[in-house]
Amino acid sequence: MEKTAYLNAFNMVPYLGPRRIKSLLREIPDPAEAWKAPVSFLQKIDGWGSLAHKFAGERTRIDVKNEWDKLQNSGIWVLTEENLQYPDLLREIFSPPLLLYGEGELKNGEITIAIVGSRKATAYGQEIALKFARELAFLGVTVVSGMALGIDSWAHKGALESGGRTIAVLGSGADVCYPPQNQLLKHQIGASGAVISEFPVGTKPIPQHFPRRNRIISGLSMGTVVVEAMEKSGALITADFALEQGREVFAVPGNINSPYSRGCNRLIKQGAKLLDALDDILEEVGLAITAGGSGKNEDGDHKETGQMSFIEKEEEAILSLIPFQPTHADEIIRNSGLSPSKFSELILNLEMKGFVRQLPGKYFIRI
Image 1 (cartoon, rainbow, N blue to C red):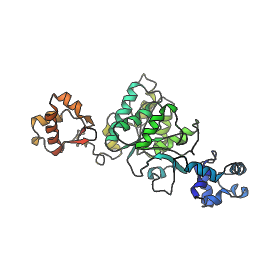
Image 2 (spheres, helix red, strand yellow; image 1 turned 90 degrees about the vertical axis):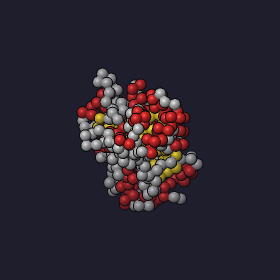
Image 3 (cartoon, rainbow, N blue to C red; image 1 turned 45 degrees about the horizontal axis):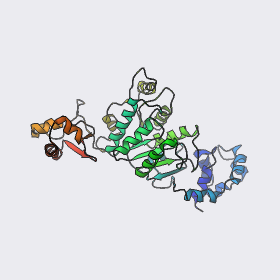
Image 4 (cartoon, rainbow, N blue to C red; image 1 turned 180 degrees about the horizontal axis):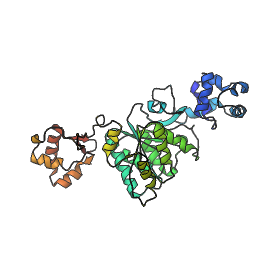
């Protein structure tokens, strides 16, 4: 039987956790042998103590092979830290997950940004989450969130609408949809990105799982964006984890009279990066060049690619309608009053001169 089968069995004992299990594996590296360790030995392991007798009873109730077969038949994959697909960013955090379970495709090394916020999102929060997720996904950034109602769901939807990748981190087993009304969204995320969890298949969502889930959201990401948050919220827990992990934290400012903005406004007071444009994210985490984002000159203004003297007046008029964020061709045509054929001619010239770049779905961005 695979060693991972025994790691899965260890992971099914809820009060052990990755740190305690790893402390045992440092003494007995073979998970199969560690599973059978005598109570007298377990009691000497750091962090085990009185739990040794409790675990001895628990392991008699877990059929390692049967649980492994159930996992194999569930359609859910499992990764250990030894697997190349296990994200390097996640390896860096304190107490990384012993195992990752999931569906879809997890790509180690991809550029990732988390977007989180209140479950009771306002229309403003929904719009902002959707906007930033779309823009990031257009530039090839994978959007990470927790698939909760509110901001999380809108972040996933924004990435999906742009045809990009998104990762949902669950506080239940990867085969369990929570909340239930996100079943379709879960399927869509798994088809174009990944749905992952550190909890074994069949695990139900309970409150104490979500802080553990939040450390994975921030741990997977180069930076965490908080769109809306009350003064006490899971999004702020995620932001705290990000800071502990040495990752960037961004907060969207909001109405000072709104309880859903108090958490974000407090984060900004405490030193989080105020976020009001995509460049704030790209520049802070060093993605401006990698992602093809805009640059800025010494005065803080956006720099132009090429010399304006080489641009025709009609081209300049079109360029003035294209911001430094993805904009659909239909919107540019509508604002310009040009025919589609004339627009196509001018936008091609601007692309060839290096002023704009076309993105999937007939979107254009100024560079």
